Image 1 (tube, rainbow, N blue to C red):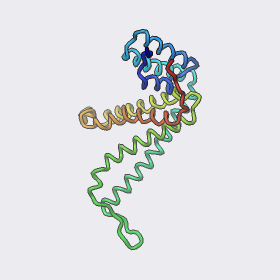
Image 2 (image 1 turned 180 degrees about the vertical axis):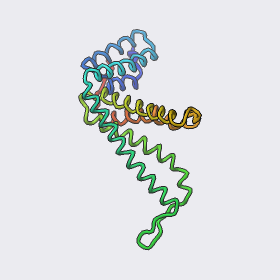
Image 3 (image 1 turned 45 degrees about the vertical axis):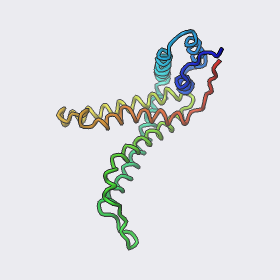
Image 4 (image 1 turned 90 degrees about the horizontal axis):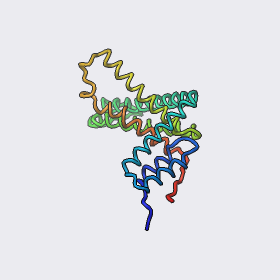
Amino acid sequence: MRSKLPPRLATWLLGRLASGQTRESLIGDLIEQYRNGRSASWYWRQTLGSIVTGAWGEVCDHKLLATRAALVGLATMWAFGAVARFLLQILWVLTSGGVYLGGHWVRLDYGWIHYRMYMAFLLTLLGSAGSGWIVGRFHRDHQAPMVFAFVISVILGALVELLIQVGVVGWTISPVARYPQTLVLWFVLAPISIVIGSMIASRPRPIGFR
């Protein structure tokens, strides 16, 4: 009779993102309890809880390293953002009249301007993933907690910017109603992209099912 296997994605995430020296024993204990009758939802709750609490504990133990990781991530994110703004400005120029180069006008059909928002979102997600890769690549010994610190800094930065905009313009802008896609981008999609980028940079830790 085959042993009851826990959710593979949850176990894979534990192997990639769990922190601390007891990672393998933690995974083994969760698998054992799952086989003894625990539900898949319980396994997922324990997985996510272990990842978050483990990362937070290591951030508290390595505050300077976490600060450096957050600053590195934010700096690279700003650099990627600058490149994205430059590319979008080029798109605007080419669709608004073009550029005269070498005796010829180089321009794009104005219809391309309708894709500007989608391109901005895509470039933001790519920049977030790239920043996550850089933070993960240069903090491999404490990868998950340092990426966690970076993600928290991004969310806090987006929250501060939102509050400043509301404070300047007032709640009449109804940010949730008027800019739902931007809120989803900065509070959901960008953090997920950062984590995905960091996981690409991580060393794989194969977890076997006993």
